[in-house]
Image (cartoon, rainbow, N blue to C red):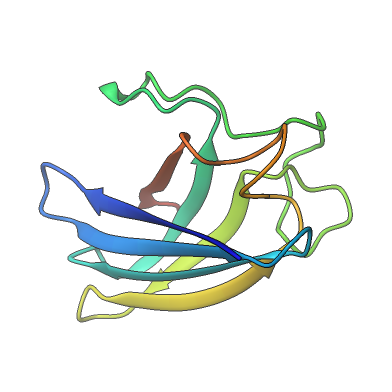
Length: 123
């Protein structure tokens, strides 16, 4: 089993952890706990590059090795880096878990070394 953790932080006080776990060539389980976000929906994505020197601008586009269309994770034609939306409650906290088949932790299309971003509210 391969396990990875991403630690989230921002200049606005947002913080949290995202855990990834993959058994063999199976799907990857993603679990997150995020604090201090504005209530509502926020986009949750893996970006192509691991460079955060210029904030979101230097992280590149969403991770999309298969060249698929933008869509929700449950859609048949969804690019790998789109992990859906995070719903944040009035307390600023979001916790969730998904299983995803497009974001491996090993091999040519591994997401290790890339950036996880929770985008500003999308409403």
